[in-house]
Image (cartoon, rainbow, N blue to C red; front, side, top):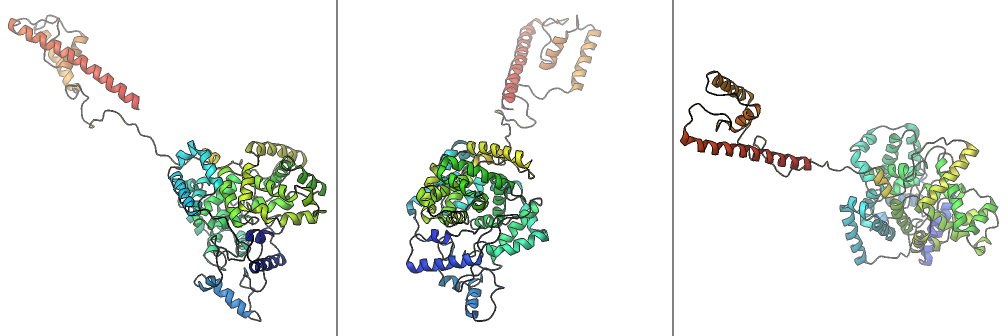
Length: 550
């Protein structure tokens, strides 16, 4: 299936006639050049660079001296990272595409500068307090993603939404380790052949061997080492290229990992079983969204894989105008794969959903061409986003259809060969499945004392065992010498040991007491007992407080 056949027309949207003619010429060249297969067993990649004169070519090897030597020299200057003169001659739009190319946009709906600054301020507050917003105000994040993430913060927001930032924190130095590894030669050769096919009209990837293509190679090679059982799929290249337009290579790698493992698990496996299942799910949901389109596709016996493979595997990066691609990705990172389903259903509904539009689609070929060259109106940013937001397709419906189609698959084809992890629907589900690192909570007691300080109310440090044994021997000697009428009880000994030698127990009488000293002794004894009792109460209170905080 040709990649983005109608994208050049859809991206212009009412430019001057000369510019439209140039875009038509570029699109015609792309049609003549054809497109590469997108996946290992079926599907497609993006368009090869057109070979028409005056347009950019993705390969330098094809530029040999001859009649077009001047054009080759011009292209060589344009493709050099150190030469900026070529870009001065060809204007670049705000997304980085060469004006007049397939990726460039014409008339755009500009957001007022003051509104953009307000949105940036709100997004900065959310990103600086991300865990709190995700836990308590996720609906607000979803609404702001539907309005569009500010361009200056889009890359950072995608990392937070996808969980790529958490993955990076959990795996420090992992990407550098993979980047330094040699890689599997069977994948490296395929990756190198695909580099120049990814957005050849974008300033980042226009140069053969430039920094954009080098980073793209690093990211894709690292993924083949990170998931050697999965390897490389050609549809991963445009996904990684879009990420690299908004963030450095390491962050782009971890966002790619999240897309392949959480958002679209199994899409890039060898047998493409997951994408086949989702094709059946899309076709079943279409019956409820647009019965007319569903009936027509059923009558023509057109397999969903013929029109939805590139849509879903590339997340519409090669189908829609670039402003629409970015808005779809903003919602996709927040809400998950249901956004991809909704976009596909909206395109099918407005392309084949009325008898008037079906008059030009009498056969399979005409129908597929209709889906390849979609009307610019239905791909326009404001119209498409509004339709996607209002379409009532939920995660519950998608999962219910998934179970139905999985049961049918098992009845007709047996068990799935690729055991991919379960799909997570959006940023909240990913955050709950993989929470970020949190600081460990430490107990904070209400009373803080130095390590060697005694507890409040105590007379000092507790007596050592030797001193207690010495006091017991003194009591025995006093008893043997007849100074004591009877030995102290165990409770009295404890009281005496705690209070020191201030006074004897109450029921222990000395042989020759001094009358004038009896009152002070009794007073001191009562004070000592009260002090011991007060000490035990304070110790209990302190222990309760410590238990409460621990």
